[in-house]
Length: 168
Image 1 (cartoon, rainbow, N blue to C red):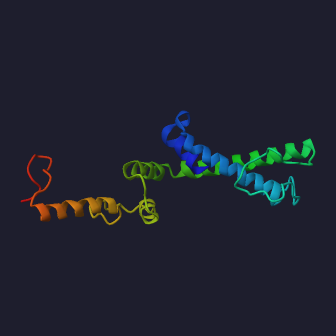
Image 2 (cartoon, one colour):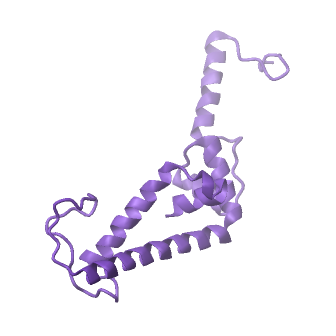
Image 3 (tube, rainbow, N blue to C red):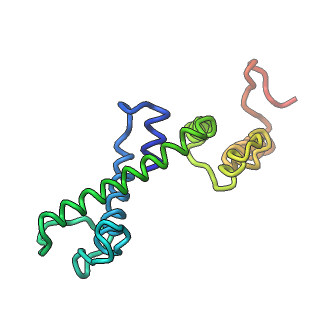
């Protein structure tokens, strides 16, 4: 649910993308398994209400022969919703407490599209990212290396912002 919460905080609730739907789908599937298959809720208890030979990651209700009462089905639905809402609220609480880091991370993802685990750890540990060194963002380093190779091979380089060559 964290991806959806992050989009809500960064872009606003009206601009949550369809990408957040995968968060909802996976959270729902996991909550259903917790309640129906694994007995991880006090309300339902350690009773198996799943379907034999059903994969957790396939979501299909068609053709299921479920022999539970409407009351039990309603309890299961309420527990699934409770678990999902609890996870959503937990993610929202963490993101709200660390909103500065969330905005910084969002900014870096918008600029660089992907980040490595080390880049994220560095970013969130309040250490400044040294973008000039290129050690954290290899795509920048590769671009610089390619420009240097072209300069060596062809004897020219792209002009700097003032219209002069970067080469001295």
